[in-house]
Image (cartoon, rainbow, N blue to C red; front, side, top):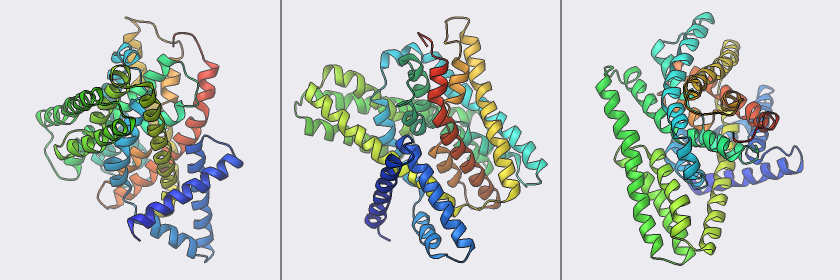
Length: 414
């Protein structure tokens, strides 16, 4: 199947499922598409059990041709992050820099080790063979909150500007840190690299700090170009080039492409809109990136729902997945509680901020993509299946209820 045929099929099915969702269950678009595609996949699998294999075989053929980890991490993610970062208020972000910084660094590392320890105990309890290094690998990929899922849900959650900035800001930056942690553990567990504090520090500086500097430089260059142009077609094209070229350049230099495009997006969305664009350009730019965001989100959540046709589940894996879903949520609560408690000595927080940040920490496509990037093995199959269950539960359960939680605990100056 050619790339054009595959893309056309995914876009068509996304549109049909979006229409069905709008006309029937009326969930938020991305979650609705994922739920319908998940139900569709489950029906195909069940029919396959009764000998009606045509549908499930075709679905497996289609989904099997999608290299999900490559498509998301090296393609769609950069455009989705840029679209999200463009709408973050930089002044609000700087006000919350300490809590966002701690959650995106200390919080990710702490959550990684808590989940890894819990996973090791659960796997031993259920007689599932899993070395501790693979448990750490699982902890690192399930630790980060997913910016795509979080930003998609926040659009309709009704959070205050300050609270929205904390949740969205953390999700935009923590995936870059989480990928560094994942790559470090991946090198040890898969490639047999020695554990070295120097190696970890160099990798962090190269990926995270280097990515931020690269994104700043690229954003600054495009910003200067935008100041010298007053044509919205050219200006929109420049931002598109910034994302595509910036992400590709960062990856080629072994820098964090997600962090690079987030920094660039913050620059264009704040300094660019205030000092380099006309009202007409801003309107067209916002419309263009909103459409890019909606289309890619629809396709991404469709693929997440369809992935179930390729995953094998068993009784112990289901039990492990449900137990570790609770453990991942508990780890998130600890990772949020410690930084918030420490920073409460210096500033005031919303009284329910720990609950909201914990429940608003959705897992999403990044976790699935990282799990799929692990080389084929029995351990990989288990990790992929459990990660998938945690992601689906997180998106559906937390995604559909975070708005109610925010409304129920709403306070001024969150």
